[in-house]
Structures are given as structure tokens and as C-alpha cells.
Amino acid sequence: MAHGFDTLQIHAGSRPDPATGARQTPIYQTTAYVFRDADHAAALFNLQEVGFIYSRLTNPTVAVLQERIATLEGGVGAVCCSSGHAAQIMALFPLMGPGRNVVVSTRLYGGSITQFSQTIKRFGWSARFVDFDDMEAVAGAIDDDTRAIFCESIANPGGYVTDLDAAAKVANDAGLPLIVDNTSATPYLCRPIDHGATLVVHSMTKYLTGNGTVTGGCVVDSGNFDWSASGKFPSLSEPEPAYHGLKFHETFGPLAFTFHGIAIGLRDLGMTLNPQAAHYTLMGIETLSLRMQRHCENAMEIAQWLETHDAVAAVTFAGLPSSPSHEKAQRICPKGAGGLFTVTLKGGYDACIKLVDSLEIFSHVANLGDTRSLVIHSASTTHRQLTEEQQIAAGAAPDVVRFSIGIEDPKDLIADLNQALAKATA
Ligand SMILES: *Cc1c(COP(=O)(O)O)cnc(C)c1O
Image (tube, rainbow, N blue to C red; front, side, top):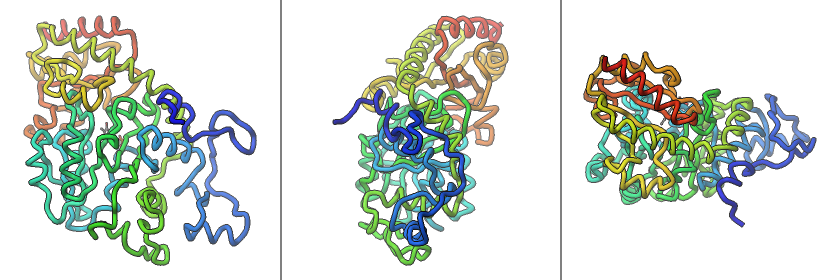
């Protein structure tokens, strides 16, 4: 019987601890695991038997989290890692190689734009930035060296929703995997695999943990992609020398990507999630649906209030009927458009700075998806490494502030905004 989301967010992947009966998932704070005997050790190292060897690869607390997120996203498996940025490298690593490229949306988290436009070049990889409102341009950017397509579901810095069905069609027609960063939506609001995504990545730092206590990331595999069909993904389809010529796709079928992520990715890149962080994220996920409902309700109420305020030139929130993303939001994330949006102030850059400095309940931080309401002036912080053209394309122009609406009493948040806007426009 398929359980509902509210049940799965509490139970998926966990069972009473077999040793003690502990009802809550224990924090297995251990580096290594004792082998039953030498044959057992050999079978584990040959990937002939699944089990625990060393916590850089697998840990029981982390394993519960992996199964829980995979279940909530409708995937076959997941690999957790140390941050959202680690997850992006872990997702691309088996697919890419020197000279290969990934076609990515211009509307991404600022750090992702930097990672893709600068840092991945050190691996000989490159990214091609395209406006995902123009699917012909996305298709046109694909060439023989393209190995993946990457976008966010509800995209940073808020208010834009990607047409995942259309992106999946372009990827599918080209025989390429679609990778969707689902950080801002979470599987409660959007399940990209249901719209045709191959892989889903998360910064668990944000809504999944939900209270600003950890950094963590995750790659979820749909299990739907044929890694052997085109010969373009030899890491998954060809013999792996480090495992005596084992072929991941042939051996593990739909779990090939997940096994590769653990057996090669975590083993050799070492971007491991620690069990303590996994525990905090498991705690967070237990209340994910309740929090997301409140984030969405509060964001809607505050966005509507701001839209009518004299100091405000524009509010980009996909929940508002005025948003160009409104129709897409109803298809892609019908339960709500999330808790992120941007506001353009008529007073420009200076008014934005004054607003940020005058808010009392809202914290000025480089984070999102906290229970607390957060604000940031992206152009002077998270997006400051970008050119003004990139800032505008990413929705982070100098006269724009981004809000991450928390789950406090919305009356208090509106009162705080009211006093701060008065100061910003004085
Ligand atoms: C925060 C964030 C990331 C990066 O995650 P970290 O956990 O900070 O490494 C990637 N994508 C999105 C959408 C984010 O919000």
C-alpha cells in the first residue's frame, strides 16, 4: 500500500533499531564496522554484498536519510553528501569528462552560477547558460559533447518556476539526463521525477533540515535512464578498473548511478555527510509538509501585501496571479509556490540596503529555507561575483532584495516590513 507524504516523511527508511529497539534512528557515530569474517570483508569490498565498511562510504544513520529522501522524491536510490554544492559535483561526476559540457539555466542559485561558470573548468568541463523560457535555445545549445541538462524547479532567487515537462522533453529527445535542483521546492511541493527528471539534487541545508543547523546535500536517482544506450556515459556502462572490470549499469541496473555515487563518488571524492548532520536532517524532514504549508501561506500573504505597497515596484512570486510563472507554478508545484521571492524597490540600491539594515525580525543572512524569515540583498552579497548582466539574468539586479519567508506569525512579519520600508523610503 502506498502511504501518503505525511506518513512517509516520518517513517520511510527507518525501523526500530535491531540491536536496542530504539524507536528514533540512532546516530551511528562510528568510523568503521566489524566484518563477520574475512569472506564477508572480501564480498563487501567486491560490491558482491551490500553492507557497511567505512563511514566515508556508508553509515546507517545516513542510509536512513538516503532512503527517506529517495522515497519522498519517488526515486530508486539516493546518495547524501556534505553540501548542496557537493551534490552538484557528485551528480555531474559520473557523466562528465574533459571537453564535455552541461546545458544549464541562467536562473540558478548564485553559488551554482559560480561553480558552473568558473570552477568546473578546472576539470575540463564547461557549462552553457541558456534562458529556460526558450526551449528551442536549450535544444540548440546541446551538441555531441553535452552530457546533461541542469535547472532548478522553483528557481533562485525566487519567483521563477521552470517548465520541467518541457525541459525533460528536450533532454529526452537528445538522449540526455535532466538534473533538477529541487532545493527551493522540496519534494512536498514538487517531485521533478514525476515531470521526467533523471536526477534530483538538493541542498539539504535549506528546507529539508529547515532550521539553519547543518550543511548537507543529496543526489536522488529516478532509475529511469538507460546509461548504456548511447555510449556517452562510459563510467556507468564500461568496465570499471577499480572494481576488477565491473560494469555498474549491467551489474546494478536502475541502481547503477546510486552505487557509483557511493562506490566511486564518495570513496574517491570524499564529500561525505556526517551522521550527526544526517540526524538533524531526519528530524527536519519529519515536519516538512507542515512547514512548507506555512512557508507558502505566509509568503503568499506577505507577497500580496508588498505588491500593493507604495515603495515597491515589483514582487516576483510565482503564487501571485501577476507572475509570468503563475501558470507554470499551478502545473509544477500546485500545492504552493514556496517561500522565496524577490522585491524590486522604487528607491533602488540605496533603499534596498536601508531596508535590509532596518528589519528586526528578518535576519540578513546568506541562507534560505529556515524557520526564521531571512532577507538578503543578492547583488551586494551572494551574486556580487557576477557581472551586472548575469545579476539581472539571475533575478538579482541591484534594486532587488530576496526574501525567504519563515513560519512566524505573518502579522508580525508584515509589521516589521512596514516599519523598515518606512525607513528605507524616508
Ligand atoms: C544553497 C543552495 C545550493 C548550495 O547548497 P549548499 O548546501 O550551500 O552547498 C544549491 N542550490 C540551491 C538552490 C541552493 O539554495
